Length: 123
Image (cartoon, rainbow, N blue to C red; front, side):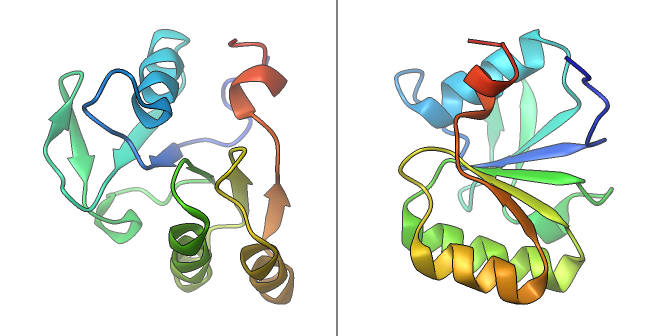
């Protein structure tokens, strides 16, 4: 597993609710040593980490964005990634849509539609 493969990673949909996948993914990526930042429009703190209200608030541009949000939100995230020049979006199962995938293709954004945690051997 190459932790630095993408540089900084942003997880969109981080939750302070430990039963939600947005929380579990963020927690386990931190434990595995990934350079990860959390995003949720509510902001706040999760697991002692500042949660950004949008991708554009993160000081350093992420090389990868992982979506753990409803498909309609992923569509908006693809738009934001295009504006920020982020080249890869990893859509967790249930977060992707044909519209988001088509938009990403149009913008030249690489997409993966699989569980990051399983693919990278974290889970």
